[in-house]
Amino acid sequence: MNLKFVVNDYVLIWNLLFQASINEKIHKLKQKLWINYKNEYNMTYRDKELILKDPKNFIPNDDGIYNIMLETKEYEKIRTSTEKYRNQVLKIWDDNKKEAIKIIKSITRLDIKPYQILVVTDQLDIIDTTTPKDAKVNTIVLGKKVTSDTSLKLLVELVYKIVKKELQDYKVEYKEMVDAIIELAILNEFPTRLTGRSHYLTGDPTLNYLKRQIYPYWLMYLGADKEEMMTFMMRDKIAFDIDKYPYEKELKKKNMLEFIDFCIRNQKYIVKIHELEII
Image 1 (cartoon, one colour):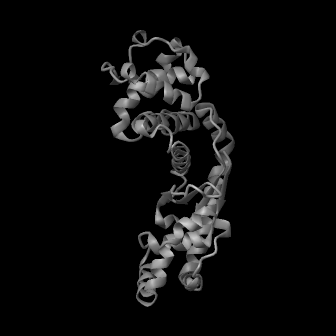
Image 2: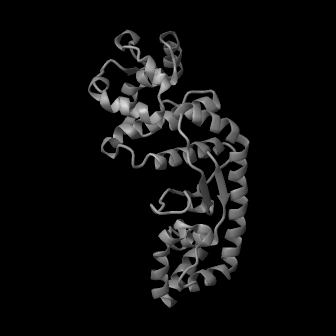
Image 3: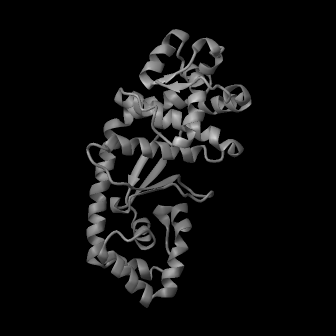
């Protein structure tokens, strides 16, 4: 997994114009542009897909709105603060990437494509994974607030969005199953290994029941033998009767896509256990 963090003026300006206003000055500037350049403003809205196809080489058909924004003192201040934010998230990634990449590879057993992280101001509080199908680069727009206490949370959320995007077209007719397994991998096991404490009770509450039913097979996928499963259950506060589950020794040789396929093929056996309970 190779991530490149960049600030792109067109991406930043587009999001300042069309996301919720981050402050009163930007709100008034947007109103002024709308009143005086309504047609141009509307045309600029359509640029998002073109920008994200090739951010580095994007040239607008009409750069009037962009030029006005670039010349304002308010944009200059936002641009400067965005560069500082970029350095902050870049440091979080650099400090953790060696361990994070090793853990992600170990859990998913997949090759994740390189991604360009288009950094915008954290005042927007967004992670946007929208990318055109014919894009030249894989992109994520990142502008989420972060503190020293939430730096690993941001890292996990970013990796989660990337893996979700990687698998967005995989077995879409079984979306709930795919989503549950992605959560087990990235929102649960990944931060558990990264921090040394369990994160298995986090994620979308609507997926909890399904995740708990998949969990015994998930442990087999991770390579836990029957003796180790009790340790995992105590760690994650998820209980099940080990003797009721045939041990699928081949699961530890599969990658995450193959594990998803296994769960889909065997869902009538997996999604019927009622003995699971939170300790």
